[in-house]
Length: 207
Ligand SMILES: C[S@@+](CC[C@H](N)C(=O)[O-])C[C@H]1O[C@@H](n2cnc3c(N)ncnc32)[C@H](O)[C@@H]1O
Image 1 (cartoon, rainbow, N blue to C red):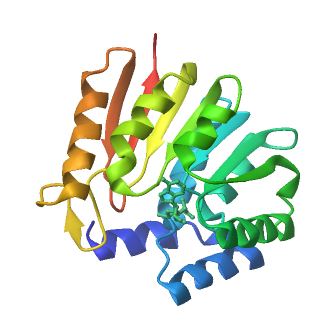
Image 2: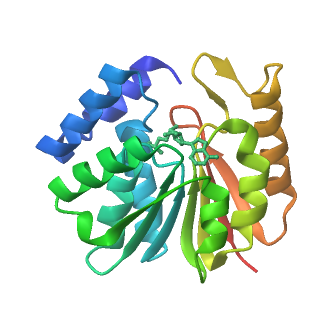
Image 3: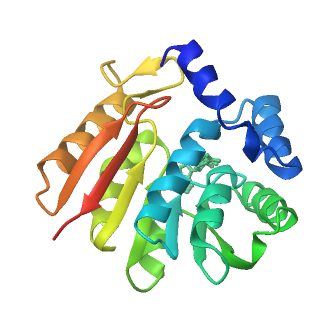
């Protein structure tokens, strides 16, 4: 995405500034940790709210930045299930989200994200995928079964990540291409890629 467009969009979102969110963004920058950033964060909240999401599953939560936006979307009494393979991320995320006043609706599960999904019961209104790219096809296969009709599958980095793009050679880009193809061909869903930042795939379950 053109950095000027990214900055222009982010400038329109300054009213969301609050101390914990700003601290999480600074933490991401300090560690070089790939949080989705504010433009994608607000996109996640908008689409989750638009389907009345109350139960969200995140595959790859890091220290809780994207979960922050889902926790706002589901509101009090909602559920956001976070997953990460690194217990230090889970600890940091639980702490940030509690300090943001959102801890009541967030639960971290430590371990492989797809395996953790299989351990939880019931359908989800939204499943969001942001794990290692080679895991995308399997994440889609597992998640697509678990989304209610009228719910959403969302996935970050579907056009690229870091300096690379979806057109590059390598296991990561190849896995992203397979993931995107499987979704485009799946008639249970209607989907598009919103080209914000590195591409947010949005798939609505219609049958
Ligand atoms: C891109 S970061 C997630 C960022 C987060 N969604 C955000 O925007 O704040 C990916 C995270 O997923 C975790 N991860 C990657 N592959 C995983 C897997 N297969 N199972 C569980 N966690 C995974 C990594 O430890 C890392 O913290």
